[in-house]
Image 1 (cartoon, rainbow, N blue to C red):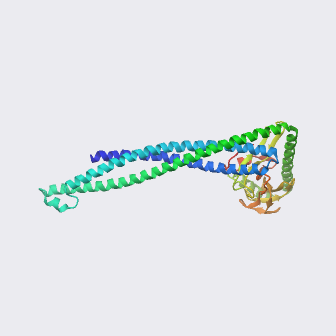
Image 2: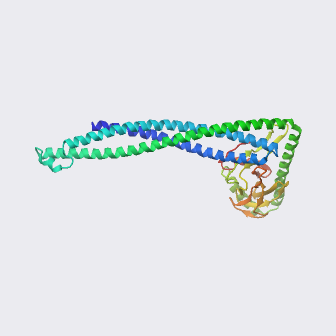
Image 3: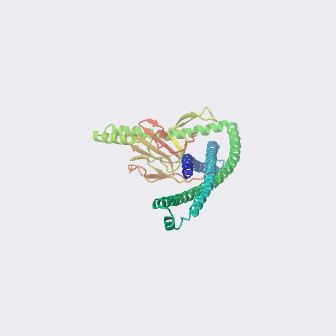
Length: 404
């Protein structure tokens, strides 16, 4: 009987270990989703604040931000649903575990009672000497003694297993209660999110209608924005031409130094740190037609990173400050040279470096504007010679991208 019940416990332990392994894997996936969800919620807060601060002053910017907000909301909706699916699946597994453990605890209580009754009936629990002198021979006495101590050891182990199972039962039950709360919380968030999403989609429809009705004005604004971008880009290209002209008369030693700088920069492709501690891409590299005014093409020589007002901007690699121009009264730019590579940071409200300064990787070189009427946007570019490079192919892969 004892052997059979030990086998039963072994079977239970195997089942529990498999289920717990599955639960741990689900927990790991759930933790990743929770981290993604929290990051996305922070992104949404920044976008919502930017829309609120615009106060209808720039319809084109408002259109872009509303589109972004709706896209982020849809992604959050997907993540909340995915999180709830995992929580419900894990909840079902935990309920099965609790049921198995409850039945096992009941079985062990009965088993322990039976062992105690057997030991009492033999009157050997407290008096080993009585057992010795009442036996017909020393051999039988030894067998009885050995048997009762086996029962005592079995009883002790069973009690320990019972306490461990009881603790496990309590822990899983507590986890079930937490999961029920999380599922309810997510459900409420989903309902609020969908209501808000519907409201924002209505605003976007009205805004699109207004922009199309004012097609000429919208097109003129877009062209002005694109012209400003070209002027900004020209500053960098001029700096590259001037730098190449200087390098043409440099000594071999300088050229060797530049080669070392190039090697240092290029070896960190896809591992360069981001220029801001927190942010997400809303303007992607490349050229494409605008979706409201398709005869105007939007071109980005770099990426636009939305971040928090007043966020510090950091150098992504060691280098030398080549220029710190003011661009179209929109803010300051910092151009850093890293051998044949250049990085540019625009628009900055304040800068902490001057032309000719040497900077180290991660050094704070400026801050983003705290303006309440414009989004906190860093325009970031990487160049090699006259070639524009996509910064997303060079930076660490750890930021969300909501390209427009």
